[in-house]
Image 1 (cartoon, rainbow, N blue to C red):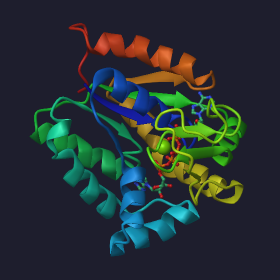
Image 2: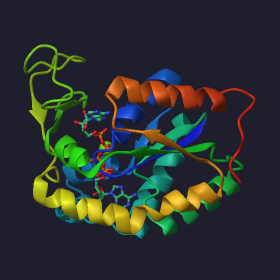
Image 3: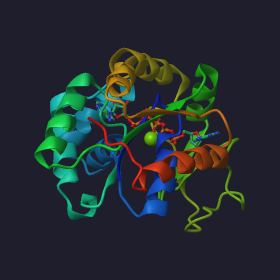
Length: 225
Ligand code: AP5
Ligand code: MG
């Protein structure tokens, strides 16, 4: 199953991608996470990209397409993948189409997560992750079961993203509506778009996603054009 999660910052792409990856045993490919890893590793590209990410702007298509193309070649993507945050422009979508066509590996589905503006800001500003295993949390919507202890790995160190602040959020949302939202129409016209109400609680959204995915893991699936 080849799947794209589309939605504005804070809509729950990473949260739902992790849940789907666990259920179906396919990798989640987040270009945001790849860029943050490159920045943490201190590479020239990573440090350059970090400045752009911290401003809430999009990194250039050329750079993102290159890191994505390297990642998707890896063997764990052979049985499918979940794309989180890629493609993000019409140029990136065209690149992905070409790549998948060359590999005779069609896209199955694009899931659009819809969330109201105020909720997006609240989710982003309250987000934190386990510094050890990366499990995602939220100050209000998903707090660790034991205070300051990760539910998954029992780690006690947590971190927040440099771009998760009220000022940068607006720039990120503008970038989404200017550059990425046109992909909703693009995939709608390819008849592979399904819309999910992302305003409900995390587990309820996951339930809706699972319902949709059932259709695509059975023979009745309708391949994208
Ligand atoms: P990226 O890392 O992709 O960030 P983003 O798109 O801004 O999205 P987020 O990760 O902020 O949100 P999410 O939808 O994953 O939400 P999450 O599940 O964490 O990109 C970062 C930057 O990298 C970009 O700004 C750009 O500079 C660059 N970049 C990356 N890809 C690029 C590309 N292709 N081209 C160019 N530049 C690129 O949830 C958020 C919070 O809400 C969490 O705390 C979670 O616990 C909580 N939550 C989730 N779901 C719910 C729910 N249903 N109810 C209540 N709380 C919820
Ligand atoms: Mg994310």
